[in-house]
Length: 579
Image 1 (cartoon, rainbow, N blue to C red):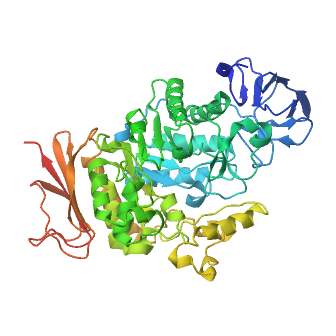
Image 2 (image 1 turned 90 degrees about the horizontal axis):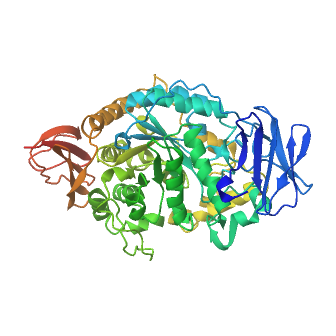
Image 3 (image 1 turned 135 degrees about the vertical axis):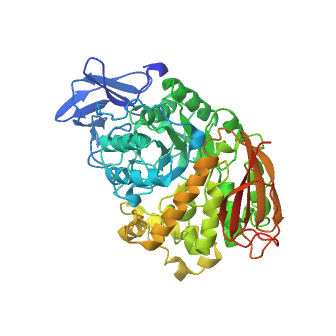
């Protein structure tokens, strides 16, 4: 089978039969176990095994390698009985209610990040919440990874079978119904995908295809995926195409691409995915610790901007351990650079001793996704505290307002719009002995933090594998009789309405610069089509003189600006119309 013919998995052919293909270069023979049939597959010199056979949607199948144990399809489209059960055939016959939706422009994106299990427990439950999400002013929803993982509860970054939505959340058709409903409400839908590693349990690929991984390069998760091989490239590229073609996601957020080597694979993925989906706006968003702005300039849609969060978090909390140490010397100056130029680190050597980033001043603001909370920054804390627990409601509102009112793309985490106080903890559902290894590994991660040097303190860090840890992390939509949540929702809806009115129509924005007026007090401006947009905020404990160009004040958090300046925990935004 040539590289041009490579396609992983099982799919229905045009003549009604089902084609099965598996790359297993370590195998001598492969049998397809289709229901009660044993069907030998035809091998080729390049390690592919293929077969066409009669089938029907819902039929279960596995592969048996060299007469040994049967394994699921690494490109299974459905795992009805979980990771360790058989795969199932899936037809592409969903009845789309909004088939002609053409999408909406990226610059209008206001993103709501959701963990399906913690938000409601299922695809159907999240779908039922969508009208309330849209009513708040969100124009996009981003799902944390849904690929099949071990057990019933997981963040999703331990995904193993990348093509199959986790049965813990529902069926493929129920996920399609969620996407369809979001489109009907005018929202775009993004999916977080993990291509840099597989979960630590249940992955059949190391035995089927050792060449899928590199022995000369390790990542924090083990041997690196070998993205130099065409079979590996096609596994992930076809996966991205599947989510956007068969499920009609508007795009994907690519997790931790700094762990993908060689980097050229990303350009290949970008080109092939867009070629496979002509006429569509394909959204490709990066998470990239290396701040490589060249990727943004070469056609990727945007990048999560951790610099915004980290500088703002240090400014508000004073925390300085871990990765916050790179921002602790001058959080106001780091945040100023983010507002004016995109990244805080653009090639300089950080306090941790490594050069990080590339110049980003020429990258449009809309190519940076900013947030004051997300799953990582909350869940990677030992106790999963939200910002509200750390700095209180006034400074949390200040952080949310700043996030919403820059021309960058704002993202808010599940529960944030109503001031949720539930933690978001790291949770898993691993088998023995992996459960013990993950528990002790999690606690060891925090041994160098001053708060957890004591062994007894570390023992209080929640066990990721305990069902209660996942239960504590749930953030269902609040009930109508919760007055505190209702007040937060009203304020948040008004905040997003300001963004929609003034920044939503702005297809382009250009920085006019930013200034630190005092520690914790900043002013920043942007040129929009036909107007200027200026914001000033004060995260200090003192009233500080602040001047902005004369214009129309369209948003204010805190008391009106006085002659002696802007009060603590205040923010206001001004529009200056073109002369």
